[in-house]
Image 1 (tube, chains in turn green, yellow):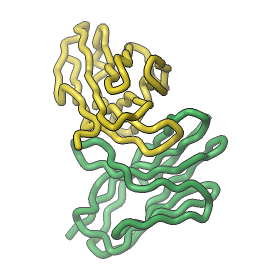
Image 2: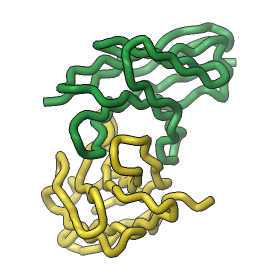
Image 3: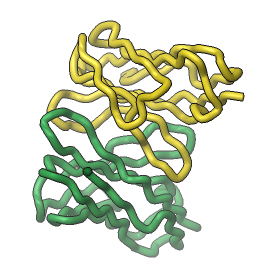
Image 4: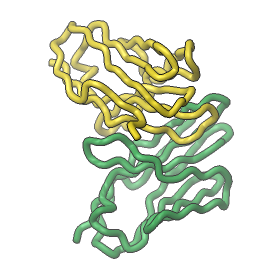
Length: 110
Length: 112
């Protein structure tokens, strides 16, 4: 059974304090690893897709990386507006279904 | 730039009542999905439709039915609502082949 595990469940940072969010996966044949951001009361919003080990993608203060067993979302010098829940998901198999982790709730204090 | 539109945004039902959650997308996507999101459980797939005319069960299909009315619309029906179905429901769509999903803004359902 495909599994996606995110850690920690919650993370509190001071503004400017860089850190990383972890997403580990145990799946049969990863075809893509997705990161989403979800704000309270809203639907998840797409951030990145990574397809192969060693791949990296960046957007503003966020950088996503992928290895054969896990993905990291690095947050550099975060700001309070980066506070949200970050979800990762794995795509496996021939159809389009994604398996989601439970998410990491990030709080950034001014 | 509507994307994925869900209605209603909020609903309160009594146990045993029925209702249909509506979802429509305007991106010409082939695949559509219904998820529920509960605290500590993450997003769990209820049903999905890989293409118009097809539907398949996901992880938690019991108590739900779906209809892929056409390429744009995918509805979720609760025939006899139970308190365990209190949740936030999200509809999503994607191109076939594992591209990123586009999510709707959700329906917050409370069953009393």
